[in-house]
Image (cartoon, rainbow, N blue to C red; front, side, top):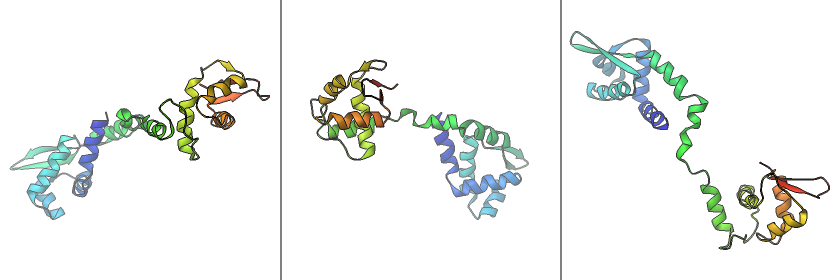
Length: 185
């Protein structure tokens, strides 16, 4: 669906085409009339109309020697409802690699063995590191503080900071007395 969005946005991304749509929203016009109104060449207007016809926003009907163009209001309304809904807009990044940032951060902060060179101070980078570290814990399994420290020790010597940050980021929870930790789904 994102290709359809791109096609429509491209068709609407020209000021002259937007003016044409605005004029056709008021009444039908021929190419020559639109050219005179917009102070453009008829060939330029024809080019713009062809783009708008292609996406289904405008249609033409023969009237004597002329083609008269008209805005397809129902198509415009349907496109607005279908394409610009929150659900459809949310599909636009479907082919974006959402883990790319995390991989970049990990490449900067991890050694070859997977341990951390340092714990990032910047929040977004720290969050990426915490998402990486928390994968060492099973969801639904409870861990003692000693076991948590043992696992975190394979990443960095400052296990207390990592433990505190994992809980603070709500990736892990702990009993109030610190007797047990578990990974949050």
